[in-house]
Image (cartoon, rainbow, N blue to C red; front, top):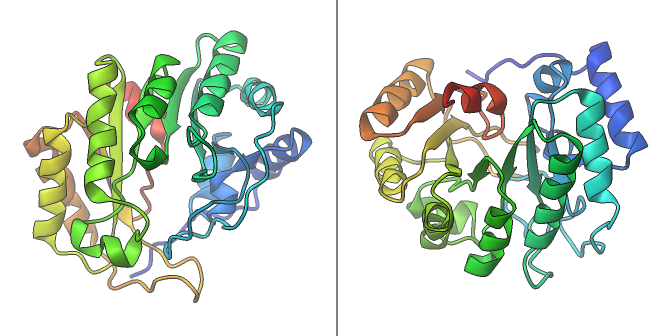
Length: 279
């Protein structure tokens, strides 16, 4: 059964959108048609999407526009920090489109955003959800050296579905990114997640968990894939609440510090609550 979501029409939602438009900012909540936008915006939380709203890749599960992006906006770090202040956030999540057109994949822009938030709100904790930077270790180091509290890179799906779901990604490359986080700075929490309902088996999900634990991933999220439009990959099946509970139980047994599992779970959904459980 397709999960039900909260209406995105509350006054708090319109207030958040007003701030975003005033500062010319994007959120993955809007650009990727996230089903949780009503819940998150009503709580005055949002996952900011930097480096524009156009991705250089075209993954068939994702609703973010793809094509030739514009150059990075030099004012974006300061504008984003101001939005965080206006929203009164104590934990902020920052992600981006893939920017394979930039030499460092946008890593230096991530670092600039982190610094701007630290300068304006030193008590705010920062989580970044990064692309794979085409496997560029030095790009990841630029982000890690800016000292975010959490670095998240989603593995997205099981290896057997990569050609179908994430054809320009690479499973091993993504595992390397997660491994390198701890190699660079062991104090940064590492995080990853997958979608289910695309045709994977339970055994394949368990194997992904094993692979992530092996590269010292701290936090694991798992949620139901929902088809954004008829032009995207169809849902193979709706995973039951009981199965999500099983994934949570097994995840803890395998060694993750935190597991967030459920139909509407996305990697940044209630990220503040998940993070503060670790502290």
